[in-house]
Length: 232
Image 1 (cartoon, rainbow, N blue to C red):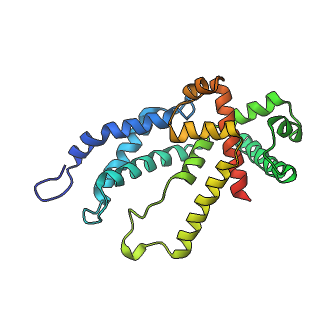
Image 2 (image 1 turned 30 degrees about the vertical axis):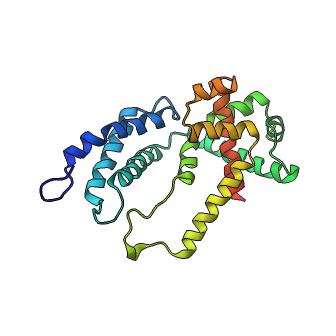
């Protein structure tokens, strides 16, 4: 992978890591709207990979594979984030849903059920579940943003985060774990199968004996519960 003068060979890197780029692209694709072209994700991933060649410090003590994995995924997330495909009205409804969820959880002292949420939003259960589907497409990135570690792979010793910032990050991770633990059991299982076991919606539906659409609803609601708790 290195040239005779000790530099990283760009062509060799692309050849070696292209399968990783493709795996990550298809892993993200199954969680996204059909309008997202997997080739765009692959292209973004390759660009992220190439940026690693220019930015990687061979004396950092960090393996290139670790550095590349992080940069490839980050480049894909940036590409998706730049698209902002959810209509403004849907985002507004999503914010109202989260605010209502947060209020009900405080009033009830437990996670509100779907029928309770629908009643509070003055809509039918079917309309509420459709809203969960409509607002689900953009949420996977928000969850990934929170879950993704932010290692100091690209910082020098002089750029080490302040202790206060590290404490804040640790506290956020702790609150995130607590929020996931507080989810209703079925939603907690969906999150585990989706993010840890990396099953797709169809596979999770088979495990739970429900439709893919229902899995998407549960995923959306779980994300909103987590966001509501973190907002508190």
